[in-house]
Image (cartoon, rainbow, N blue to C red):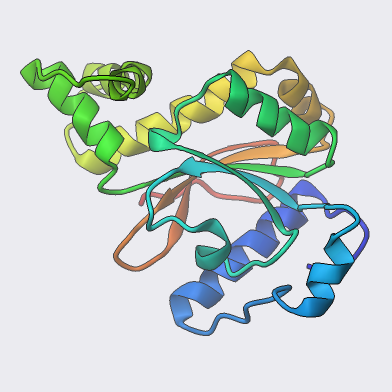
Length: 213
């Protein structure tokens, strides 16, 4: 993205999805990855989206959305679990860098969700700080079970939806930005096999449809 004007939330989301379509079609443009872009972004950054995703090595944001230097402000944790550092980073992206879009990116075959399901259903335990990750995913797993969901995709979708809700509940600054129309928060479910991204939750967009991954 080379234009200097900040896009609207819907325009930013369209840019992101267009990049994902190029990636899945096998026709990536690899934009904004040359020396000129490096020089242009050295003084300051103006990313059009904050991407908060799982740390999974198969979810390299700039690759799967075909973006380049200065396009995405990326925050990643295992199972996209929230902590103060994540909230501060997202608020920085929205409040200081004026990003009009926040994306929560989950995916199928998520190890954090699988480990949490095992902990809940089989009583398995984890050691060290992995246990903290599982504890933070547990409310999503419990909610999916309470709703009678059984498929892995349903558990992951629930966790993505809960993360979107938790972001807005815990960050008054982000909630205000959405209420004022300055940004939107979207939850995407990424499929590893075909590389497609599906909307499972959207707050603040005017033109989007929640789909079934």
